[in-house]
Image (cartoon, rainbow, N blue to C red; front, side):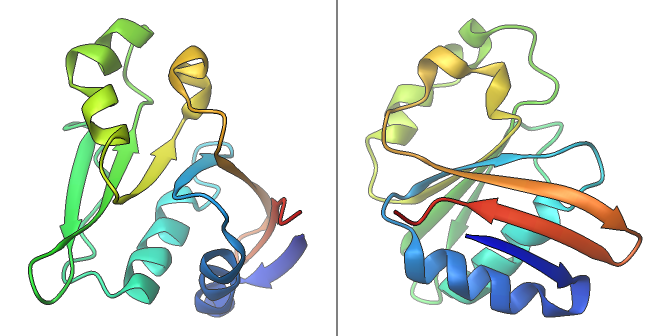
Length: 138
């Protein structure tokens, strides 16, 4: 599915992704500033996360819960890692063994650690207010 949208319509894109996602591991591809974190925030809102937070660029991972305190999602930003061993050292495999949604920015930094069943989401910068999003819904 390919959608072009104005940033004010990002909630609709988030709803479409949640409705069509066959997997709970979502990998976000796009250049710096394309809107990966903004889309993840919209997804978290759509899923009912209590706190939308910020990009985990420095901490590498943020954890999100629903209104009842149940674990909902993890948001990873691997931009600053140097190799896959850093992801393993932080317990990447343990995160994959949860039932939570897993949102991964910069998945190209950990290619051999990603499970087979992921939804790849490609975000392209069109102009200051417009993006294009592509993902496979099979």
